[in-house]
Length: 146
Image (cartoon, rainbow, N blue to C red):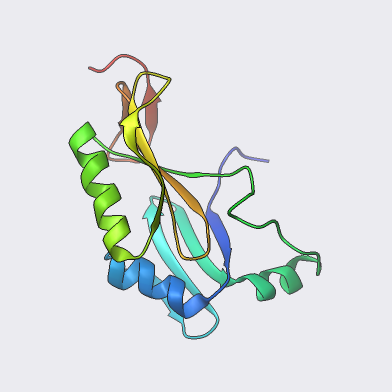
């Protein structure tokens, strides 16, 4: 099995509300939108984020109940280029309807970060970490800044 992730699917509590948050609130453009069923966003080369109803995702997998995203040990990372961009992104997300879970602040690892939750409770970490670089082809490198 090759080391990759091509689609991350969020089982959302209200598909229409989640779509409004990501499209109208954050300004993301859907790659494919099947009204009432699923919305896909191209988030990186070869990588999609899908919004799919939680009940539909449970039924589609094996019928078992999925973890509550507000308590699940999971966060989605959104790396930015500066501390100011962390603050701006957090404010933008809050204006779009996100709940601020942890305000932007200095992180234990030496960077700067904050957390918000989308309408279904999925937590996003907005972070600036020195040395975290994303190349044009989507390759991530970690280490000293160039």
